[in-house]
Length: 467
Ligand SMILES: *Cc1c(COP(=O)(O)O)cnc(C)c1O
Image (tube, rainbow, N blue to C red; front, top):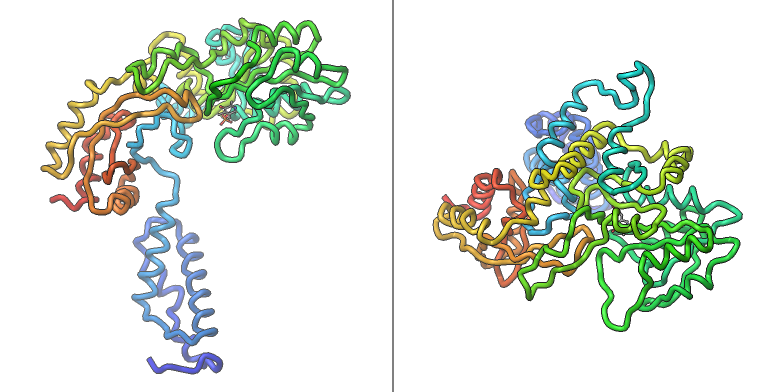
């Protein structure tokens, strides 16, 4: 290739740029829709032409261009939504899709997906019926509530409640400064409040809020008292806040509703988790039933955190309040589809039946190091000295029970560059996500399904180039 001056690039160089149809042919085996491949080729060629025109870069040959485009397409394939093996030990990992579903829930989703359903059809009356009325009934039983309903997620539940209750002339929402929290990426309670048309009436301080702080803040413009569960962090030391029962008493006295955003929504006693001592544990996650029994008018929580179901926002509480929420025109914009409702129904039924081990995260929580060690030993044996059995600490995650640590067992891979090994495992045929500690890549088996063990061994072999 003859070097040319950058400024007077002859059209001949441009003509040497490989043709789109030639590249498309060379990349015919790439498993992505043709228009996606075409768009990447065009973008790549545009960049190439730009580089040739501006700094007189030599035109690479067709094979070189094809292999660059192939790399871009491979990167794109890694960005598609796909299953991964979660070896982080974080049970409810928001980045990894929170709770995996139980087998009955998966079955229910598949059937509902393939077939027509009685989603809004009353089989007894032969006419239109309430959407998922039976699921709402089951949820109410689980929460020991008069009534319950479901929307897209807990954030949506909160927005719906705020839009419904905070209407002029009563738009002020009384909330403690210790509860103006951020949950995960970009979900901030004060912003949600304001985006819903409510006005914030902050009371107390970050660490201490008294019942009198709330009492003094209530006036004619008060729409509700909001209590937000500090799910993903804890306050310790010189702290105080009124109990739900005290707040409920004040709310009743003042004639305003008390709403509690529980977030995680444990429907079981969490204090026995991580009871191994030292690592913490014994944290009590308020249950919807306890919050309602203490006098809350409405509670909301996520379906895919401690409940172990699909993404959903569950609202439970007084029947009149739930009915009114469902009459809000905005409710229609937040409703769940038949797939989510089917998965949630199967999950809630399993919980009501106390078949809790069917729910993966519940099963994972109960696993002991003794349960996990034989699996780790079998894997290490299969890896011929490339791995060792280690220990680690699993976490509940998903902004739930931040102090609860579950002693766990890991498969440890020593490597000169553990970060590079971690990347190879992420980018394998079956992506595996672990964590690096003590110069090792650690794979926590608590969050790996036993059915994935052989797949995990194969993935490790490929990443370490073990024969
Ligand atoms: C997780 C959480 C939310 C958000 O729930 P999504 O279901 O993710 O919308 C809201 N409030 C609290 C307290 C939470 O912990």
